[in-house]
Length: 252
Image 1 (tube, rainbow, N blue to C red):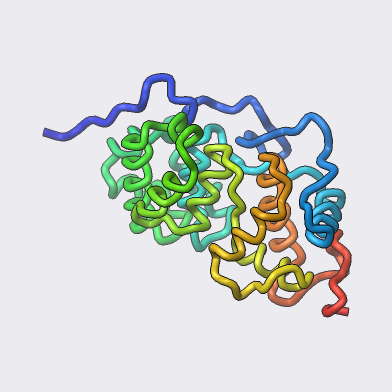
Image 2 (image 1 turned 45 degrees about the vertical axis):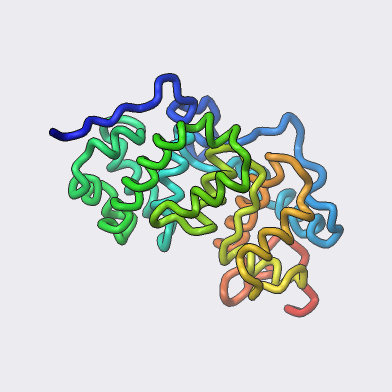
């Protein structure tokens, strides 16, 4: 007999957001006033403020529900966000994704729906794993309320979830103050002489969390600004002349 999964009654992770910007709906924190400070470290604060003033608030992560943010965090592995958007549109033809909906869908059909994201067979298995874990964990309320260190450790034990994916889920879906570290972050920190970009992930994350202002909006905007700067400017060959952040001395 085939198991029919059910979503948790009243799970806030499945509630559609009322927030939207030019990209569409997003899940995140919207401060009442513009952010005036990002970090207790003066140099890090200067770089992030310059990016924030130049780009404006990013209001990230795109998605209709917190659970869709979780799905997006899996789909964005090793691909561009434009491909994730294509995959999400195909996945959402019958409505926003839910954990039970993913688990009740034949994995072959799930893989076909997310084909534009690349590595679709593997990512389908990852979505199944994260959906099952989400239900077993108790839904979004548990992700918001449980002690963070053991929760993060448990999330890292889910098949297909690495540190960057776990921290994206915790920061943007669960609203936890966790610093997300990606290749763009490392490049920006390294080029501005702030932190050794070759340090292990956990050391870079700890370095950031010791310095960022303890505000959820700051943690969300920090990563979003790094993505924006990295995608448009801080590429393998730097495009400092068009970046809002002051050009690092070592790139003059």
